[in-house]
Length: 383
Ligand SMILES: Cc1cc2nc3c(=O)[nH]c(=O)nc-3n(C[C@H](O)[C@H](O)[C@H](O)COP(=O)(O)O)c2cc1C
Image (tube, rainbow, N blue to C red; front, side, top):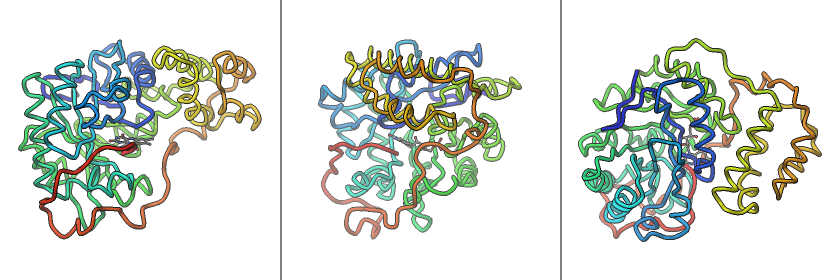
């Protein structure tokens, strides 16, 4: 079943969830290529760029433009914006669509990172429904002339007592967004516990536009299960694909009706993927130092569950050049098969629930925002 986002038709109803510092052009290309190897249907999914701050994009900050790079082989350039100010989001959307060839905009209303929520951004912003509405409305209006669909990504709410997903979903629908993606946790939960797929069902029931379900898809069968249990129109997958871009091959195959066992790469294939990841990053950054620094964080995800000794593992996590990387990869036992214990198991961020969600003073007292424009500047990451 296709996922339709405005004028975009996605015959494979799967999205790579935006992940700050992860879903850059190189990583997205690797995921897309895997998805394309699992199905002949095109496009084989939606692969969203890491989050971009609206004000920085509105002013075309060079560092921001450098991060907002398209995967050259992807027919859809999908970008997530983090915005707290209606004027800035409109300007940022105009730059993205008018000057940078962006085909899909997602708005981040799910970030649980304290330095974001403390200022009223991310996952706590939908609580102020008037501000939320103005941001979404301005983004949709700015994207309209370019025919670019806008989606929003949000959470269940701030905590169980302060839920926002239904109001936010309805407001977004009225503003003309193409779909709502729900990470089925509260901000308070961050990444802890289990995603509450029943919340996805409730949102599906409340809206007429497509709902994209997100949270705790570790295998392709989980995606099918989520769609069946919740009625969601598509799925979004993040941590499950960390160090395991092959998951997109399984997802594309299963979501286009093929009965297929998970693809289990040998350690030699994993090493090949790491090498390719390195070369794509070098092309993207234009220098090895940046590329290797980016790649280092992926190493433990790639090697999860494999019998690689501590010394070699440690050295791989500190690589500083392609020559060094290739030398170390050559020392791996390429014949080792994929560790079954690493299947259907959480990977990436989990952590504990927040004991206290940081918010501006008296944020919860009213659902209406009457203060000055909120700043979205600073180094924000995570959702
Ligand atoms: C390292 C990391 C960075 C993330 N950054 C963002 C982000 O920038 N924007 C966003 O909407 N969500 C972000 N997320 C949340 C994911 O998009 C996703 O909602 C979450 O991980 C739950 O899905 P999953 O269980 O498939 O991982 C991030 C998650 C991780 C692990």
